[in-house]
Length: 149
Image 1 (tube, one colour):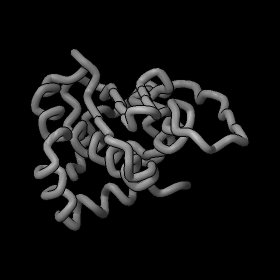
Image 2 (cartoon, helix red, strand yellow):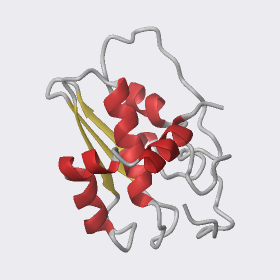
Image 3 (cartoon, helix red, strand yellow):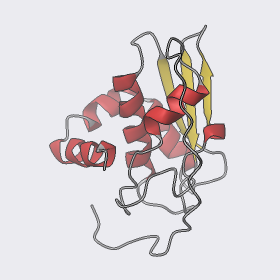
Image 4 (cartoon, helix red, strand yellow):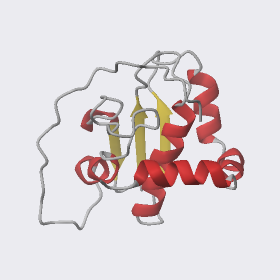
């Protein structure tokens, strides 16, 4: 990964109050958001994607009956050089933590990145995702992003 920061002074948003519930029987926006809210930013590992407003509760859509989850994330800059890494990490985290019946779709928010179409195409291509996950350096980065503090 580049040692040069693209976003040297990111805007840090206030953390939302964590909500918990006792019924864990269904998958919904709430439970899916909790699964990914602590993923660390690859450029600023001391901050989560939630801290940077890359992910919000509103960016998570779940249809439990159709077994479908869509995450729409917003990079901090339109020229961010790591949106594929971020999207891949979100995808991996959800695939690992959701029941196998779910199809997970991760996308860059419309108009939020200069290479939105390219990134979305990469994240939606199973063969590209599989090939990316064969790269040990990338897998190490994704694991680091998913580590809990």
